[in-house]
Image 1 (cartoon, rainbow, N blue to C red):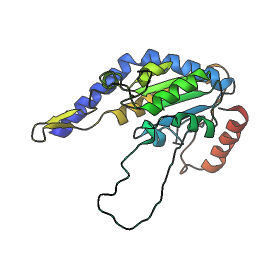
Image 2 (image 1 turned 120 degrees about the vertical axis):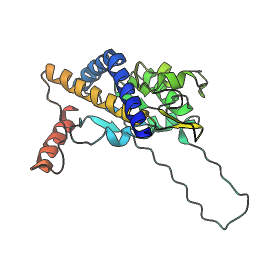
Image 3 (image 1 turned 60 degrees about the horizontal axis):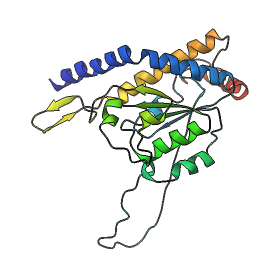
Length: 246
């Protein structure tokens, strides 16, 4: 069954993460913990599909992880005209957009900027990584090195995200990010990057927690809203975050 093929292939990706990414997770977590203890903010921006929901505000997750949310809506109701088209332009391909995001966000020198992009070749994530790194921020890429290595950067520097960031966490998915070939379709199905990215993110957060505890610092961690006393417990943690940054 295709389901069984997916189970086996996905387990293979996760096993590869465990065997190849441990050192990178450890080193990244150590630097994140150190910076959090010194007052830095941990920013997360995902141009993909999952981390902004999975990695932020979840039970068992660190309160220190803060999303950079980007919304841009244009309303222009007009009558129908054949052939009229504004085209599809994503913000991740707009030159100069990183400067706008930095200017409107709360990123300051010394912060942690974690960027998720499976392909890692579009203009915006690379530009944001390079510019925040120049500011003295710790830049962390969560990307597919194999996939990205086979793509040509759209940034003038020629760099892809894994080349622009100081730390790189490889989600270990393949070129095309699909696991199960289906002959009848003439293509493969079932992406790996979402599950793999979550696997890495929680491994990273658990290691950051461990590092902070070893420093004598107790980080705020969410409990489920359905647990007894959750509102009060989470609020106490958030109050601590506002004071200490973790």
